[in-house]
Amino acid sequence: MKYLKFDDQLNQYISKHNNQDDELLHELREVTYQKTGRSMMISPDQAQFFRTLLALIKPKKILEIGVFTGYSSTVMARSVPDDTRIVACDISEEWTAIAKEFWIKASIDHKISLRLGNANQTLSDLIDSGNVSSFDMAFIDADKISYDSYFEKAYQLLKPGGTIIIDNVLWKGTVAKPERIDDDITALRQLNDKLAADPRVQSTLLPIGDGMLMIAKL
Image 1: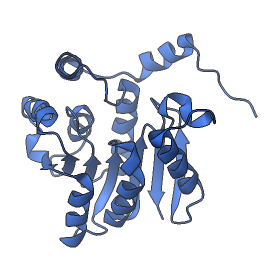
Image 2 (image 1 turned 90 degrees about the vertical axis):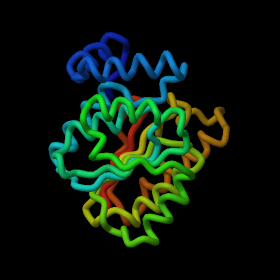
Image 3 (image 1 turned 180 degrees about the horizontal axis):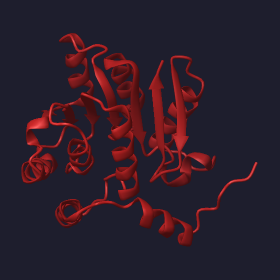
């Protein structure tokens, strides 16, 4: 088997053809860097992947686990019709305040319901309140140790045929290096192994950004 080698030149070429961020999204990324000192956002090429995916599956109800400053939710909300709703889960009032500011600026705040608190509890509450098999899509991008729990609950909330996207599953390539061991890497390896063999789903590991699992609920 032959595989492409993603050197800097090829990565720049791919990024050039995948980056469709506009001024508002550039501003959101800059504000995030300035105010948080962190880069915990999907990359612009991942954002373009979402735009294409959303155009294909046309979801009416989306679940997001991990909001941070709202870059991914802004990309998604701007890519779906006005009657689509996003339930966005996060634990930080401070960082999601930036998200809310940009949702309003982008005139998409009416599409997004922010649920602050422990995401596992929020998902359990959604399950208990009659939302099983009601979501068309879920995006998981939060604490890695909880990924398996988030997946299992998102799976319950997803309709058959629905799509789950999980971010950071390559963790800067460390999942493929046996000598690298910590709680995050171990959790990601276990999840990747589990979903590759899970008969309930069809999954593909994509080398986009920091690695994404694209999962279809059978």
